[in-house]
Image 1 (tube, rainbow, N blue to C red):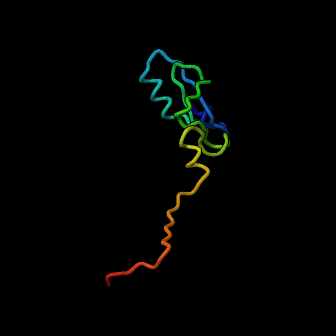
Image 2: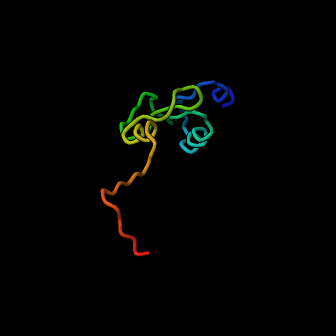
Image 3: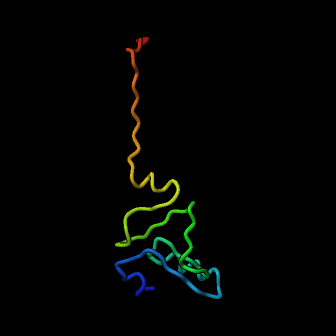
Length: 87
């Protein structure tokens, strides 16, 4: 765990174990953007955020997530004519 977390990178990691709960505990402690427990580390689901931590890129990519990473939410209103205020 210490060696894996000491890396400057943290895109993806894999944990192979016979105990699913132990694998989940290890996954929570690993500093990686994606952790696969008892599965291959090449899965890329288009509806999930894809990205790493540390020096493994910037932001998250995937449906919906890319828009949030590359834009800034703002609210602007425009009224074509002056409004009559009751006060």
